[in-house]
Amino acid sequence: MAATDPNRVIIFDTTLRDGEQSPGCSMTLPEKLEMAHALQNLGVDVIEAGFPIASPGDFESVAEIARQIHGPIICGLARCNPADIDRAADAVKHSKKPRIHLFLATSAIHREFKLKMSREDILTRTVESVKRARDFCADVEFSPEDAARTELDFLSEVVERAIEAGATTLNIPDTVGYAVPAHYAAIIRHLKTTVRNIDRCVLSVHCHNDLGMAVANSLAALGEGARQVECTINGIGERAGNTALEEIVMALKTRQDYYGLTTGIETKFLGPVSRKLSNVTGMQVQRNKAIVGRNAFAHEAGIHQDGMLKNPNTYEIMRPEDVGISKTELVLGKHSGRAALRERVAHLGYHLADEQLNTVFADFKKLADQKKEVFDADIEALIETQLQANSGGKLWSLVGFTSTAGTGSQTSAAVSLRHRDDPVGVVRRDAAPGNGPIDALFKAIARVTGVTAKVIDYRVRAVSQDMDALGEAHIEVEYNGKRSSARAVSLDVIEASALAYLEVLNRFVQQQLRDRLKPTDNVPTNVVPVV
Image (cartoon, rainbow, N blue to C red; front, side, top):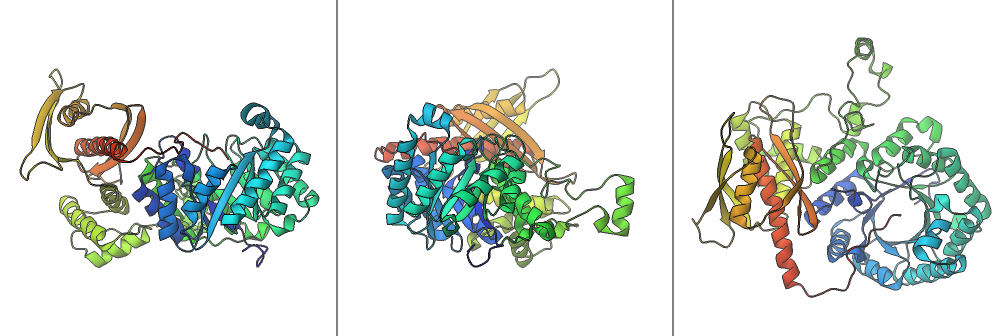
């Protein structure tokens, strides 16, 4: 890819791997597949789909994405040991364009305190691992973890050995966000001038944002000849996050005059994919976030507004349409048909089967009867609710509820639920008091289901700006030492809260059932890479 066009930058998206490691950003298999389809439409070159040995679920996600997603390279992460490499190879083998991404720490602090390995041990393990990966896959990427804090002479030696062993991409991670632009550019420049045969491979960068310089460091590295950037949607990732895909792409596009570099990204999908990820994870983008924040194309100051009316270029260096943000939203109502909704769903960047679209259309019609106008955010909320509902058969579903609250009176709630295995017409009911209607409702649900979880985070918001907007409830709970989150929408925020709480309880119970049925697997489940 880089060999045919030296000015083409490869966009390596790690939202589904490094991004998912953000606390509260874990995704179910259907959610990962939906995001992978969105990344395919966006035009990313490489999708790092996960860390196959981390858990059976991660392996399944990588394998299924490899089967279903065509176009991008599908990559699986592995430590430099035989079990990891074999597991990653088994997951990505279903892709027409598979890649194995190896990593091994090289900095002195990691060698001494984490790995307990000498320099020679690191070199030997690197060569053995790259050769083993090449036996499975022609496309092998190697990352010397914590490269930004590794001695330059040793870093050059490791990189050179990896190239000799057959690595096709060499990634230089700033694992802990320690680098600054001039420092990071100097590392890339040093490697370009000292490592033999470095022109045989693609030089890649992977920056973290601990000092707020991930994008700046990545751009500095591109200026020195790096041609792959590892990044995530909305910049999510470990700690302060990763290089934000939308920022690196639009920096190159807007300042093409300066960098002279291009990508294959369909930028009109940047806004929709950003919103999709926020809906899936519940992690909302800050209003003043570059490119995709709500304020990115908003102008309040009088002098700015005057300039915009005369010529938008006075205060906007990009057109909102270029990143998929409409100046005016397409408003759908109760007279809109299925074809109009289908077109809008596609414009918003979603990939729905006919059955899913039919369900969303039915929900859309019900909502349109209740409110005057249905906005993009409302439609996205309906779609996300449907996708979440398809993440597996529900053990418990909400039939109805009531709640009472008032100044000086006891708050209580009653709930009616249906269990999947109950005969038709059977409904289970219970009631409970609480400190407010939401607390009472959750306690009533716990009584019926027999599952009591600890609420870690709970919040509600309006999904659009009109007075009769849908309300979205997001909840994160802990049960038996494990955490999970869910979201739901309704015109009634109490109902949305009940649906979200019930969704997350369903996940816990269903996981317990799966754990009882599946054979014991010796694959470690607590492995968290920090490349």
